[in-house]
Image (cartoon, rainbow, N blue to C red; front, side, top):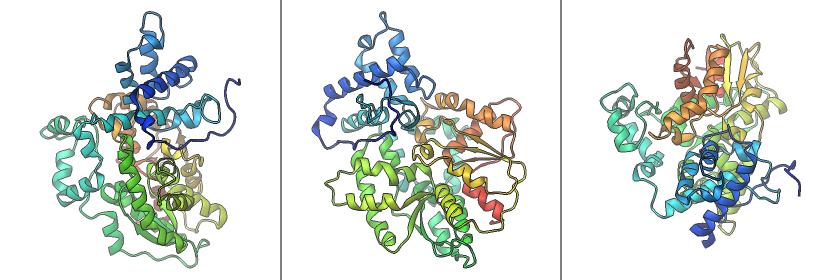
Length: 449
């Protein structure tokens, strides 16, 4: 038996329609099998809070064995997992095809699916995952919603902490009355026929975040694509299901995958590439749906077709740069840029595409940080997780402070917001007024509004 595997990791589909998947006795046996391997390895001790919690549980027993840890205590390890996939993608030597067949993130997902099926997920957490409903309703009263959720609001944030279990100090995304899809419909863009990539066609999958919380991200992306000769369309059939995935609602994820794949298929058949604006959503389209949607489903061929046609926005721009060349007109960005590479961008196994893209900007001073921000989607907003998230992300904030650049960017907008909060805690650090997506930085270099 080899100690570790040098082959590229492969992943098995989640067999969640098998009754054994939800068998709690078999689940605990698998948890203990995997945790015993992790206990003997400990390579991931500093990756996130799941592993320190596991090792502390073991080390505090009289004989320092996993057998002495009660089953109920193992839940704290599951609770700390943000499903970032970094242990699987970059740390663990025992992932398939190794015979140990260890997939820590998907085991955490299986545990959450069991908890969800048993009705153990709190109502507040379930309601927060309804991003389309929440975005539409909050958008109708955007100024009021943004006032109430502002972390400086000492009147409403303690109430929100009680009602929604969102930590009172956690910065939450703003809402907009005019969504990205509304703005795109009102402000058409046209492909530059003189650009080297003229002839390409791409549909922007808006994502719930860009549509409701950050329309400027979507507007920057479509402007850059059009400037580079791309025939741009926009589509938003609904949320990709990542929020539901985080809490183990696999039926909801499967439904979202089928609905979106059916909606985008006609555009793919017309030659459009699908470009996602947020790496978590790109990961769902390209990878996760293929592992979750049963292969017996009539939607599965559509899921495969969509996956083969999908790109992260930074990945797509680098593809243009390498194959046709970027359109001319990029100017300097004063003050330099610090770029955080998001975990779900790394999990796509595409390389540092955000950094590759920004290095095309003439004379750019670029600092790249490839480490977890600690946020983990909605995980870092929770009242029980926020301070842990700040601790995990502290090294990123310190690196950003040391870089001292004028622009902070992250491929994950939520991670960028979290890093800004981390910078506030670094003594003497200059805190930029906002965090940008790298495509927004490229838009600035083009002089696009």
